[in-house]
Length: 410
Ligand SMILES: *Cc1c(COP(=O)(O)O)cnc(C)c1O
Image (cartoon, rainbow, N blue to C red; front, top):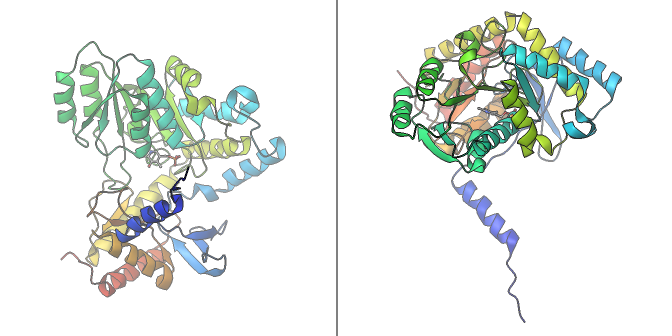
C-alpha cells in the first residue's frame, strides 16, 4: 500500500507565514536585567551576542519588587535553608512550610478563611473556574466580554453553560440573570483592572446584581494585587468590598515580582478546589524559595505604601507628558498607559524602532491580545522610572511617531 504522507512541517510553516502576513507574528526580546539597576537591561541578538543596554517600559513587575532587597534576601536564605526544587506535587512531598505560610498570608490579605497557591495565575484561573463550574450541577457561568484567556479556558474546560455579558456592564448582567432559571447555580467571573485598556470594573454594582440573583462572584485581581488598597489587597480592598466576593484570585508574578498564582475564599470552597482540580493536584508545587520570596513581597507591600504612591505618581506623570506632545494616550483609570497605533504592522515598526535606535523596550500589543484595529504600545511606568528616563521616553516616542507618520491628537 502506498501512503502519501502528510508533510506536517509544511503545514506548520504555512500557519506561521499566515501570522507574518497579518503582522501578528510575535518576536521576543532577549534581555538580561541588571539586579540593582532595574529597569535597565542588556539586550541580545537572536544568535546570543550582546547588542547594548535598553530601558524596559513594558514590564508587569509593576513596582520593581523583583529587585527588592528583602525579597532577594528571603529567596537566597530559603535556597540555603531548603535547597532548590519543591520535590513533588503538594500531595507527594511538595507542601513546604513557606508555601503554607504564604497561603495564610494571602488569606489574610483578602480577608478570607483560606487561600490556595498554584504555579501561575493562569493555572489558578483555569483550574478553579473549570473545577467550580464542573462540581456544581448545571452551573451557568456569566463571563465579562474582555476576560483573560485563562478564565475563558477554565470556563470552557468545565463544559458549563456560558453567557458573555457586556464589558463592565452590570445592567447587561442583570438583564441576563433575570432571564435565568432561579434554581441553577450561577457564577459571575470578571476582573478588577483590565490590563490592556487599564479600565476598572464596577465591582460593587456587579456584586449587587450577583447577590440579587444568588450568583457566586469570581474576581481576577491579577493587575491590582500589591498595587491598590491600603495593604495591597487590590481594588476590592480599596473599595471595602472584599467580603462581597466569593473568590478573589491573584498572581505572585506581577506586582509581587516573583511567580505563582492563588485563589482566596471560604475554607470549604478552597478545600473543593484543592481536592478536585487536576491543575492543582497533578503538578509539582512551587519551590520553597519562590514561595519565600513571594511571602516577603506580600508582607512588604502590606506594610508599605511608598511603592504604591510613587507608582501612581509615575503613571499619572507619564500620561500627562505623553498627552502634552499629542501622543494618542488611550483613556485609562489605572496605572496602565496604552498608546494607540491602530495597525499591527506599524505597531511592530514603532516598537522595533524604539528598541533598535532609542534603547527603549516596549512590546507591541497586537491581536489576539487586543481587538484588531486597536493595536497599541502598552507602557507600564514603575517607581524606578525617574523623570529623566520618562522625558527621554516622551521625546523618543514623539520622534518615532513623526518618522512613521503616525497620527497625533491635537
Ligand atoms: C497575566 C494574567 C493572568 C495570569 O497570571 P500569571 O501569573 O502570569 O500566569 C491572569 N489573569 C490576567 C488578567 C492576567 O493579565
